[in-house]
Amino acid sequence: MAEDTTTLAEQTPPPVRDWPDVGVQGTEFDPVLAELMREGPLTRIRLPHGEEEWAWLATRYDDVKMITNDPRFSRREASVRQFTRLAPHFAPRPGALAWADQPDHNRLRRAASTAYTVGAVKRLRPRAQEMLDELVDAMVQDGPPADLIERVLEPFPISVVCEVMGVPADERQKVHAWTREIISTAGGAEASERAKKGLFGWIARAIRDRQDGDGDDVLSLLGGAVRSGELKEEEAISVAGPLQIGGEALTNNSGQMFYLLMTRPELMDRVRNDPAARPAVIDELLRYIPHRTAVGLPRVALEDVVIQGVRIGAGDPVYVSYLAANRDPDVFPDPDRIDVDRDAGAHMAFGNGPHFCTGAVLCRMQIELLIDTLLERCPDLRLAVSADEVPFRQRTMIRGPISLPIAW
Image (cartoon, rainbow, N blue to C red; front, side, top):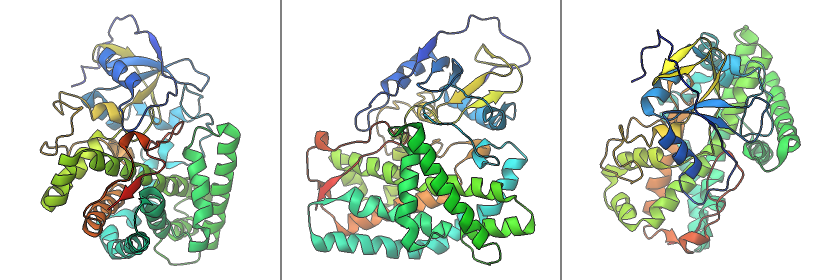
């Protein structure tokens, strides 16, 4: 557990470690992060972009959990400084949920939360199954080989998130093109900024158009919140954008899941032959998969805090690594091994604390449908190429395969 924070530790700060935007292959765990974990529990890092020279990084499970729950570490304060970071472009929108502290965070999140409850996702499940069946039917009819990303893993989550958000069918590819550009680090600041302007401009128009409606999609809910005065228009737009972008994560995450299943015969046999084990397998894969590059968004210490004998000064930027927390051997013994019989339910794949992923229940439902449906319809599902021929995305914040050639 974190040490008593009432006294300040005398210390020599650890050296600053560069964390370049390196190309990591396949589902390999980032070797830079692995080294930082060995040096930890708290290190100092410098990422490829940003103006400030360094930031703290916490890698132990208990420290990550504490920092992400502790109001002494502020997201809002981190939104006004150009910290060292992975993304080439940094211009947080006013009222953005990701940069809000309490009580504003709950106020912003509440406006759209009814679309993501367990009940709402349960009601959506039959429609999601219909959309998935259409995609799998078409793929099976055309016969192998097929690209699982192109045929299923990309269009399915896009369709689902657009259904939840209320994006019309004829607008979905345009919106998807913007969100993909935003999560990439390859196009540079100008490309990212163009994509953000396109996406957020479209969202602004949609929210205005729906302020007088009574729909239950997210854009309608946010339009209603603006009409009632619960949210300012700029806040509603800033809430909607990340929810739309979040749909991209599932394509990449599920792509890694199926890659792992198809490259580990014993794991695939377990999932195929023991349906009751699938929830545990999903949790273990969520724990294991390195779903992002480097780290996410920073926080700022509002006062001096001592963690593990290391003094974090007021005003210092602090990153946490959920990937590292998910590989903490004190919580998950032998963490670099996929063990479907372990209790992995405490993983932090969806984050922790007030900023726990809004769409976690929705994401979980889609993963369950994908595994159940594809293994039922394609019982001999396998890679159509060797494992080392599967191309993975490079220079992107969200990791995953570009294509996944399969046969069945």
